[in-house]
Amino acid sequence: MKIALVTGSRKGIGFEIASLLAKNDYRVIFSSRTPAAELGETLNAIRTMPNGCYYLPCDISKETDRKHLLDEIEGREGRFDLLVNNAGVAPLVRQDLLDTTVESFDRVCRINLYGTFFMCQQAAKRMVDMKKAIQEEYQPRIVNISSVSAYTSSVNRPEYCISKAGIAMITKLFADRLADEGIPVFEVRPGIIDTDMTKCVHGKYEEMIKNGITPIRRFGLPEDVAKAVLASCSGLLDFSTGQILNADGGFHLRRM
Image (cartoon, rainbow, N blue to C red):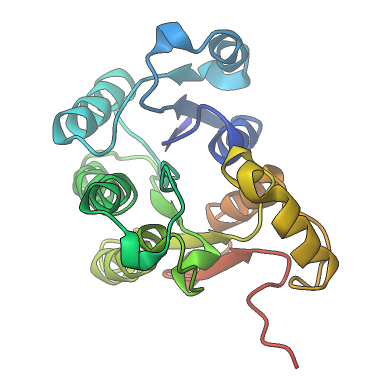
């Protein structure tokens, strides 16, 4: 049984990624910083998924939480085959970059940037060791979820853009470092996705889509991102380590 960990999978994109992996022969560990006791029906939904999926809480901005989560999975399963770094937050308040506060910048980057980097680091070390120890075929992979904000300026949420641009470099660095270890690393870049994070600007984005900001004129869905993740860990793209999969309706295309 292949084991996958998906951070930030209590709802939205993360939940859809984890659910799709569970339908494709993975035992998935759902995770977020929310205590299990507060999940309600979501916890029941996770428990009824195939392959014995379960939930473990983790605040990826905290070193002790990251270590405990990976220790727990390794102790229970003896391996993990896939890490999907999806956990991330937007600024609590969108405001001009001239007014961006240290507190907001630190909060966003500690979760989105530091958390992703050190999850990659800790998981990679364990995957390298597991490749030496596990005798059966074992092909681990890492997938980082970033955003079109990695290269698109939004001057009312600069801390978010900077954190996502950093994830793009994290992917490159780990793809480079782990190539000799036989561990592919990929990046999936969602575009304008219909989630809780975009609710506050739904009308604005709806108008932009209507006017053709994306060649495919609809909101992206969490399942669109999940399918890109599934493709990246299918084994068909392993020679393309470091590859970016754009789940953005064609936003990345430069058009006249």
